[in-house]
Image (cartoon, rainbow, N blue to C red):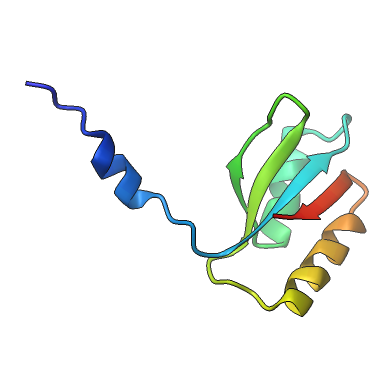
Length: 87
């Protein structure tokens, strides 16, 4: 029989939370990006895509718009971040 069951994989995927799209500076190292994500308590969800964008989860719960804006502003102030957009 087929031991692979895609449905069980989908059960682990959640759409809850607050997300953003980030483009890091080309010179940013993996270590620098990892530290930035840890410092802001952000989880990398997907990427890099062909356009260099990464999807990140800002929080496991849906944040109010004002809070999302604060997090995005803090990220934008990072020297290794080139673009941050809410998702």
